[in-house]
Image (tube, rainbow, N blue to C red; front, top):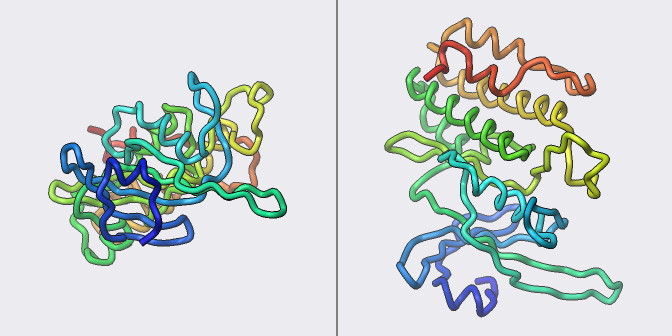
Length: 253
């Protein structure tokens, strides 16, 4: 098992590994004070990024999750706390840093990709629930001025019953800034127009994937979704919005 710093082990019993990929590793962690279960994601520190109202900079993914933590949306995975696990300076001067993020654990779940594979003939009401919640998660990020930038079926957890989702992995996230000239880090920002365009295109791909497992989604809704797929080569042109998708008759509450 990966070495964990003393501050992590003082607060959490680190259990089995539940995931691993290019992003790092994920372990089960049991908080000693109340035995509540969390996921502990161990990953590279990555780039620095700021948080409005916070002095200093944070690892980029921590910064993104700190911002969305304030959202009331129940479909975003929430960060509990984070730790610097390892810091090492290489002979060439490069600093290697590893962090551990303690994240909400929703219980038994699978990715949307796994869920759809298990349900080749999805019921219409379940397809509507998934699509509506995924779009609401994207909208919640937008309201916090964050572009997730990586919405796909492996970054969406599905929990049931009752059927609900959690959008995870904010490592590619960017700040949405209306005045980029006043933001000192161009590598961590994106314009509102570009953020909308990318998010809508990613949502269209998700909806089309769900539709392949549910033939009873209304034709009018799918025709609208097809019209949403805009070319990413068209600079700064917003043709459709996240709110517009939610306002389609089939998705309205």
